[in-house]
Image 1 (cartoon, rainbow, N blue to C red):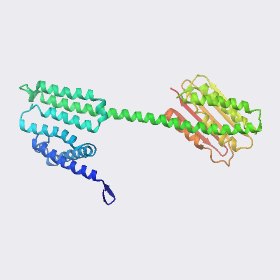
Image 2 (image 1 turned 60 degrees about the vertical axis):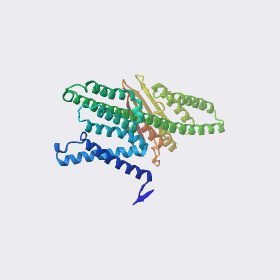
Image 3 (image 1 turned 120 degrees about the horizontal axis):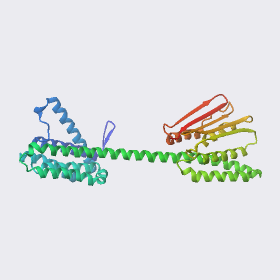
Image 4 (image 1 turned 135 degrees about the vertical axis):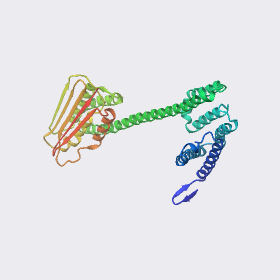
Length: 374
């Protein structure tokens, strides 16, 4: 390990840098010696010639550095030998249709691709082999023609460049597809996590209330157990679905409200208006979150005159939902973790298809939600 001004370099890193630098110089000397792969300095101004070759050298060095750090030097030398063979053959044969340069160059490119992107290469190896095999086949069919240099060499070069371009585009699509699948899996995992954060919190509170009623031997205990059973069934079975019928979500909300009402000794005015003109589907265990928030941070904070107004309406392509409640002016925490989960689930399930408005006064809180279902 070598450390210089805060930078640590391992022995293997230094070794790969030295080898990559040496091989890059050797390759450029051989290719330059052949005269077939370096741009003719007489065809461009010196500054452009130097810039192009400098970029090529840096790219060559970076590629070799990656290869040397990951693979055996013998494998790398074997692949680079194909490039050198192609360059030397181009120089010594002095004919436009020599039988070595094109096949060796294609095999070199395929070898580098196999080293750098092995999983992609293995998955599409048949397509890649057919593409480059077609170039080689075309080359050997027409290389013997007297007019090969004028009529066919350009086509061979074009096919070779086209094959490389197609491979790069296919690799880009492969990477895009992988990224999109990763995003989908991350979204699913995030949604599962959000659901797991909501359900245990509700059941913990409900079981505490049930425990209190059992201790008091309340007549409401059996009814509460039955409601809790219905809610658990809905959560366990329907909660796994992406969408459920809105009427099932409403039944779940009604059971939740009844469970919550049983535990209050004070008078609470609860209004639940439903105008379901057209059946709709909705993400399960979603609308109950603001209602739970209203109970926890609104009704629980008041000793009297507590109210909760809930409204659900549907149209041909939308669902409207609103919750309005009052709370003690001394209670400044009306947000809660549940509301953050509510917003995140909306963003996942209804991206760009919902509008959420929250209005708060000194003692009243109102949440309205508009969801586009088409």
